[in-house]
Amino acid sequence: MSESLRNRLTEFKRQVDRLPETDAPPPTTLQVLGRGQLEQDWQRLLFHFLSPERPHGLGHAFLEHLLAALADRNDLGYTFSRFDLTDIRVETEVPTSNERRPDAVVWVKDEWFICWELKVTAAEDSGQTTDYVQAEGFNGIDLTKAEVPAENHHYIYLAPRSASPPTADEFVQVSWQWIASEFQSFLTAGHGKYPSETTSQFNSFIRTIRNELRMTDYQENQQEKAALYFDYYDEIQEAEAAFENQWDEYADTWGTRLAESIDIAEMIELPTQPANQVAVEVTKPTGESERWMFRQGSSDWAGLVKEGWWLDKADRTPIYDIPDDKSDVRISLFHRLEQNRSKAVENQTLEIELWHGTGNGDQFMYDFKDLIAAKIDKDASELPPTTEATGRRGGPIVLSYEIPVGDHDDFFNAYTAALHDAFLDLVIEYPKLITLIEEAFEESLEVYE
Image 1: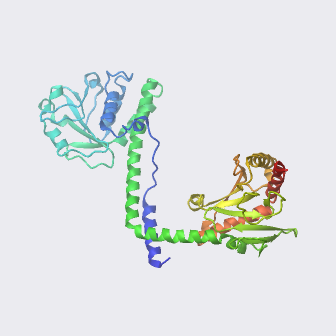
Image 2 (image 1 turned 180 degrees about the horizontal axis):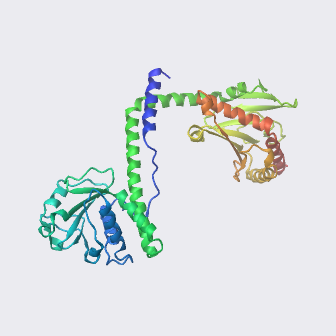
């Protein structure tokens, strides 16, 4: 890789790493129904709970809680008196004298009012909040501003914390995050006092608020990453093309690289061995030897085959290539390069599976699956720690190994190191698994007698 490309990709990674990690949260009921961002629904829910006459079983409790919390804020200048509670009125979609319609008004006649404008994702309409302030009154509720002391005119702009501020300075910006926290503190303080259905609705609304605002962060995060992708598109494409070339080359050479990494293995040639395959003879510490073939050259079916695992059906003699007429019976260990690419590259995991040849037949596969599962269960302590009986007919065993990317300067060297560790586990450290595989293989062959 050229130095300039490396520098550009390093800068790309630095900028991606600076973005906060955000996940898309699971949806609430409103979100499932496609109504999670509808301001009208949020408005209805909030002022439903704030309206004492509604059938929620809260009476004036939540109204009192929220107004007291608003009075505790330093930015609103609102004073709350519990003596006002029975006189407080709540109305939504109130027309003004200048033909505007704020989302809600909470008021005590001739004493005070709070005019509310709610936003979830939309921005303020042109001059919207200014018009609310300049209106002489609220026609729909017969409230004239001149009859209310000027210091008791209050305006709230309820929006996400990250939203742009309202046009009119008289409006105080209150965040939905703050509202959600007040919902939560009200529920906590009144635990068990209110109807379960209302409590459930409260909790769902809290989650909807928090999910949508978190989703906004998630979407912004994705947009920034997409923008970085386009900024560095040429460099990413160049790096991806280089990786694809190396991947294809590795599919053709992994067996050779593995054979060269094993100190106790000597490369040999077997009868009728395909030219692009690699055969080795491994000498164990006990002095015993066994032969293996590494079947490279496939972008998916990369096999490790012990001599004697591929047999001619008729006379049970070893074969070293796949016949065209399915006159064979075969088992092989595969690390499926293409199918398991994401596991290898993203999760840094090498997965090795035991597979059957296409000519084995259903009865053989079922017998083998049951036999090997029973043997693995019986001798689990003598097997590689990640050995798993899958219960699948076609691939009854799988093993997993970490690809030690951090220990190598090249991904493919790390992949070869994982293959090396797996092979030595099977042949030297935990030979019991190979023994069990061969026992199950021989016992299953009886169906062909």
